[in-house]
Image (cartoon, rainbow, N blue to C red; front, side):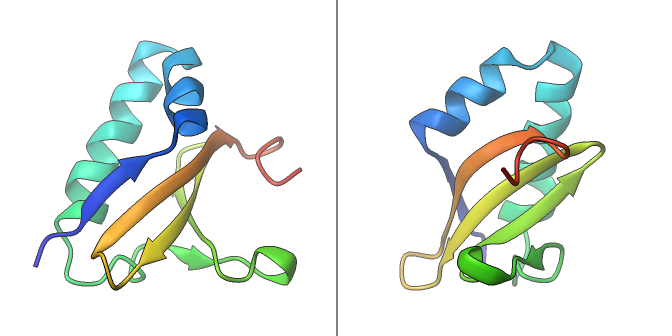
Length: 88
């Protein structure tokens, strides 16, 4: 079963601001490692604290903050950013 991957407007803007090589690497990761898996929780890691319902995926120095919607079989990408900035 494949999962759909959707990006919020914020995530789309953040992805466009990145250099082409990094943006391509993130898009490829979403296509191959997240969308084509039986369970997207296998490659990600749950966040803790106030953001406990969210998941993060690591692509080099960049982090993808996502919400996994089981009822829609969708991974919603909320934020994309460098690891030093994305958790603020």
